[in-house]
Image (tube, rainbow, N blue to C red):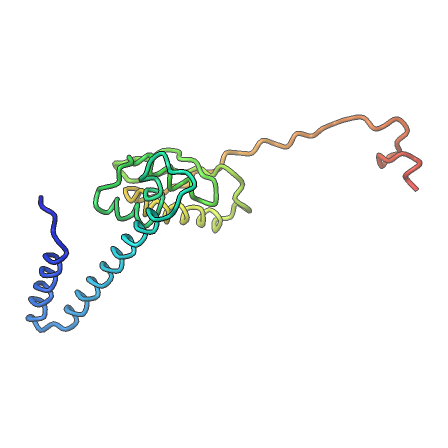
Length: 186
């Protein structure tokens, strides 16, 4: 497969838009032109991000020169869109989950169903449904860029917390009922 040049792609887009304009459907032409604009903005943003990331001076060069690109949501999304992302699915899932504000654990991914099971690993507030939904939504947003093959997320209940250990000790020898010594009780 030979690479299409920018000139060839531009000519093909113009030809398709011209054919569409010949139908006389102004709404369809406007929609097609909008699609072209949106895609141009999307790819332009992606290329700008690549140039920015590669142009930043690094205190120490990364072990993997692709690392800054693979960690970027926009660039990772473009690579995934075209099947060019070099990392496997489990690695990309871990990358997405590590960026979440709420710690979660991968409890298993079913590639046939596209469902990822997650377990919240730390206290997520009150435990109310809205908190669980915000965790699920944050995971879905991150996974959309890094692992689009994840099409569903199930949150497993958090592991029950161990009860707090109650320390039992003796009072100091002349302590009153309130635990203070008689000299400091007044």
